[in-house]
Amino acid sequence: MAVRRPSWKCRTGPGPLPVNVRADGTRESVCRSCWAVAEPGKAASEGDPDLMSQTGSGGPGRRAISERHAGRGPAALSRGTVPAMTGALFDLGTVPDAYERYLVPPIFRPWANTLVDFANVSTGEVVLDVASGTGVVAATAADRVGDAGRVVATDVSGAMLALASAAHPMIETIETAADELAVGNSSFDLALCQQGFQFLTDRPAAAQAMKRALRSSGRLALAVWMSGSLLEPFDVYGRVLERHGMPEPFPRAYAYDFSMSPGEVDDVLTAAGFTSVEVESKVLEVSWPTLDDAVNGIAGTPYGPAVAALDHEDQRRIFAALREELHLVHPMTAVLARGRKP
Image (cartoon, rainbow, N blue to C red; front, top):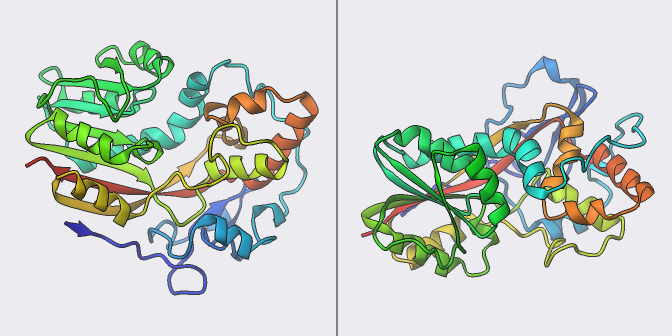
């Protein structure tokens, strides 16, 4: 196995900082571990040769960091006048609709391309996409395998898969849990899983289930959010709701630990019996069409229904706080891993 360790360090160590772009066009270099801000006020159009040039983040977990650096986060930054309320946040009615509209284009589609490239998906292969959601990875893989191949998307959410089927009729869908996988043994050349593995309560069982579904010498490739740094926008959504006193809308909503380190991913795959395991970190730049899209993205998460149930005034306060803390452009860091069934 080979683990490529991240090279970006906290502000107290060497290396450039990721750059976030505010809605007013200015930029700030922000340490994603300690929230220290460097070089505030430069225009984003000036460019930065170090933008996104380093990956990863050292340091302790996010909860310890937020406690140690209280008052140094985005809430302390001036963003100018905040509108009273973002418009039409919950027009779509369901989490899957909002997920597909707001979160897939800026976040999950670029990461789908990255994962499919990392997995070396080829023409004619039979591919299993686990925890597929609305099918962005499955659809991307289907474009690569062509008519000679086959892609099966699985998810525990029938509502998500319904959207996947409607938007991508070339993929097959099966409603099943990742740690059970109601698919045939030794049926697939490749198993993919994007940003679902870290949420599973029984990761070892899920890894074993994916290995069972693979043919001899079949491959697994997955992506999970990397632990150790604030994960915008999702951690920002949670921090704002927690600060406004909302009870946890789902278990461990305010633990901010739905992520994994490279070593944790490697350990699970190796223990499951995968060989030739390779693990690396990767940073992509997220660019939102508008700040409203970044705010409205909360409707596509498990936080969404809880926010929708609030009265107008409470929603207004939450939307205003989100506009203060979210950025038009920001980095996201993931762990990519691949292995092979013996």
